[in-house]
Image (cartoon, rainbow, N blue to C red; front, side, top):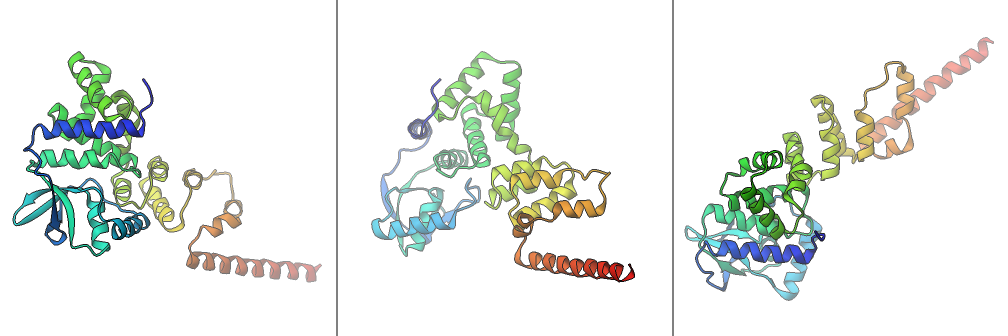
Length: 299
């Protein structure tokens, strides 16, 4: 099977979106909606927005306007955003009072699917967002709760049922993101990360590679300490792995300290911690030099 391309994913979006449209009322076309009448759904799949990227989009909106309408549904006396939160944020930053929008009449479940479909088209999609969006879409197509999708996928790998396998093949072919078997064996593992790491990933504070390195640390206290150091000092994946290794019992305290003392380790410390470490090193140096001079005088 050829490797999916960006065009495949765009086509998949249109195909799946069309499938959802068949179950909803006909779209009412594009209209201008006041930004102050739009509220964001609490279940929006996207939780983090890169500030630099958002600023660049806001500048583009100032110059050219919003080129693609957002997707809304009526909610009370206003509208609820289904897809396009980044465009809404950029429009507000750009000082716009209205935004082009398509308004649809959709259920909560259909709104979840439409939001997940748009989320899958992001350039900066991370593995956790991809997995959660994909599970939402598969759950809708199979008519099962989201929480039952992963067990179902694993069950189909062990004991395939031809009809279910055929449906899964069709869904993932339309998504253009590889096979459901690969998804089940390689990607859904991110959901087993400790909850605190998943929260940091959703907040955009921790990317997948370092979260995966921290997830491999089984000791909860050590993992919490390394997570704090990673957030404060920017530990690399290699440094996380090195610090997670148990210290050999044969090493003395002096040997362990020597192993930790290098310019790179000091450079990764925050300004306050680095100043403190350098002060302690200076104090130790003075102390040891003083001890050496006394030995010289005795001899």
